[in-house]
Length: 507
Image (cartoon, rainbow, N blue to C red; front, side, top):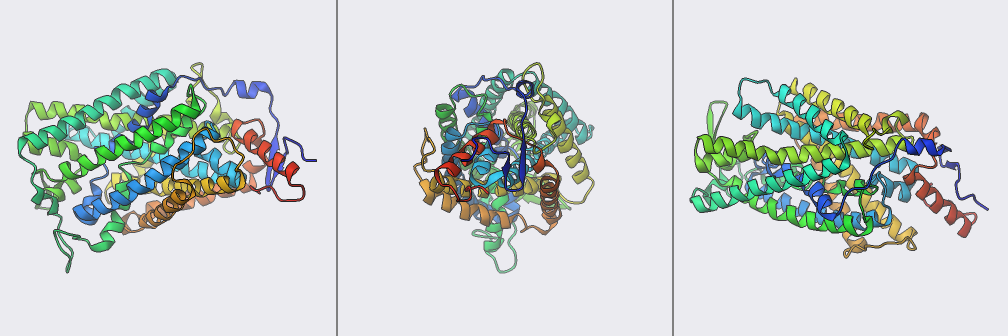
């Protein structure tokens, strides 16, 4: 008869730890559904302030609009799948624990690494956006100074405790939504919105300027930027060990969060693209959507186009930073929990998961910030747009995670029908199949822009090196008592008891 705590799963070997090990790696519960909603929306809302607009240059207005609709469908499917799995498997590892339960330690590890790539690089994208807005306000200060100051400040806030982190996140997220609301109402009431300005992106030879100026290939190329309207809502399951009522609060926050983001993305895409913004690029004056598509601070450009230059615009631009700050602050939370969970389970060096006196993973938070800042600095030394390059790298990691999660949902539905599911996705397996097809399609789109391929390839190489690290080193040092691993090990042992002689489903 199999033991309930086996010490080997495939190539993975497990070690026992004492209670002191977990006591030094303990998180504190302090989140209800409203704070979790703010965590999810706050992580994403910077996508309405910066990043999405590069899709206008890639595909024109309609190209980006079509890509946005398709990615919105993918995220709806993802949110419902993850809501079900997070209620059934509530651990700090989030999506890594889902894939670990479905496909074993190697599958979970790959999911965890791509999660880490996504969140660490996403903060780098957002901090570049913060630097872009600050450059518009204070031209004489190098952008990297703003990057460094942002990391120091918000990593510190995250270290000071989950309560202050989430409450600050709620305040800053609400402020960001108010700023977007002011922009929408001001644009509509001012009469400055002009539908013709949506179609100013120069058309490629043989293409229609008003329909798809870059052809159907432009729709494909716009996928990564459409994703930016929604990327990081999936971080909510990472709060599985800090939520008051995981089975109720996380699904509720995820569903309310995605519908909030769907509404914001619609208004931002249409209204911010159709204002009379102007921008000089290589001696050429761009207007409307073409100008917004090339701007490093599109909402600031939108406010300026609607209100004109002046003190009011400067103040609104300062307030507009709230959106970037909201995402930056909350995604720091996310990478901290991913690195913490992978380290606690032994996939990454165990010292990374030690928690502070505030019961926050301070080492993981500092380490992730240092890596992200270094990536932004290195990319800034290369030709091209720093934010767009980093964005594609982050999206590449995210889409691998999404694909694994869709497959995990399907596998768990088929192989573990007895798993207690306090929340059930209304779309079921068909929704996961649709989401998986869209995520795989978008994954290939990360290679559509030649200038950004080196960064994406670099992420793929890093993932390959990480897998070698697991195969030859960390797979022999996994922690049996880590919550994500213990849950999976018990399920695998029970499967062996019920079906003797069969291979456990995750081997």
